[in-house]
Length: 272
Length: 223
Ligand SMILES: Nc1ncnc2c1ncn2[C@@H]1O[C@H](COP(=O)(O)OP(=O)(O)O)[C@@H](O)[C@H]1O
Ligand SMILES: [Mg+2]
Image (tube, rainbow over all chains, first blue to last red; front, side, top):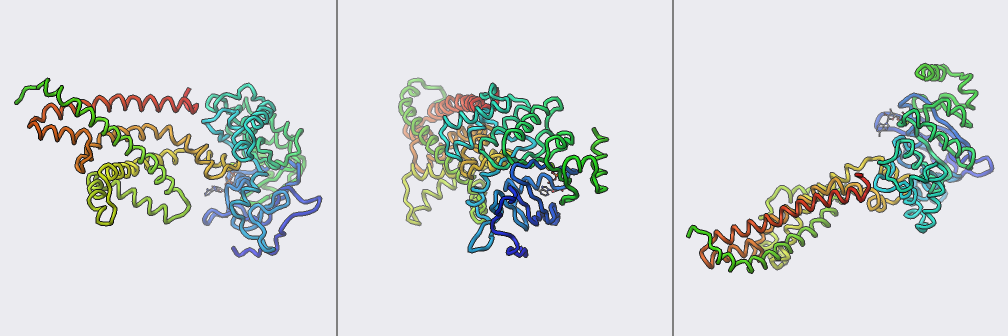
């Protein structure tokens, strides 16, 4: 890495420090540069939506934040501390497993294909992390899991295995499973893309409730422009591994400035 | 000397019965060794530590490419030259356990590789450690599809126990050979050994299927 690490702060402090910061982050797969010196801040409690054409790097942004991918240069900060790096003798060095594990506890993620554990019930899925990772008692974890299943409207299905649940139901359980870990940041990667149209609202309804109720910071990738407009504080349009344009939903959807944004939005509109 | 002698059959039955116990013990013991060692072989090939992966891979390939009989002879007769002096039972269980561990490790590996990437990622997203991810998420899902293979090797190991007779383990084949040599009659002992093997193999294979179904149901993978 030829990156000069001294230009990255050791911590982010102050009232206006973002909950998540990507600073100069580059991600490559072999010769392919998927993200090119990305800078992106997400404020505490903010809901930021990422839109953009397929292959523009939207999923990669979330996966790097969830530590499912390593980064090639730059630093990602979460909750004031570096995630991808840690401080050693006043300098930032690559994070070790223990540091990443500690930082990862601040982040939760929901996937396009739910990825529920098929051998566990809905309740079991939501208790797994709290019992195994947070060290909660079974009883406490169950109470909390039931509360969350109730919140996503899945309390009745608590004893069902995922194979017996519809896509919309599985995704709601997956949201409850992520929330059970009490993350500060929630990531949603096209969580409605694999769903039948008639059940999409089950899931968007849950996310809408999260925006209203919790002081969660959220980063969401979606192709549902209406939903993005309705719930986002800010929308980022990704193109070819960088942010082409960003702003409030009104700014981005009603009066996009960049030609690529306009083209993308009119293409999406036509498709619908 | 061509007719079947019932009284002779009755006379040798107790001896064959005892030998059957030894055969079952050899199969069971060898299988237990193979189950555990096989999992170790499989997991060793998945560590990020390259040398361990490569060495284990080679060992498994080597064991799978050489005959069990040779491995039995090797451990029992060549071992002492290196100061490893083992009883026929120990050497036999080690050889058969090692041999089947190599095959079982491939079954385990297939099962583990069949677990979708998304399961590892979901486990990571709720911050499970690697050990927890294997124990709680991956192995429970890798097991059911591997069970048929794992079970078949139980029957396989059972059918291979006669090879232990060559180093003097007193299992069924060994008993039948001794009886034949003592009485100059081989029809009854060998026929009986065949029938005993059949009488154990068939129900075992059936039980294995039942067990597989039961496990799948228990894990909620079938209704
Ligand atoms: N594991 C990988 N190996 C190689 N290339 C990948 C990998 N994952 C993603 N890519 C590539 O990175 C680019 C961005 O992918 P992604 O972030 O999934 O895009 P999006 O979510 O915007 O559709 C794509 O060109 C994709 O093919
Ligand atoms: Mg994507």
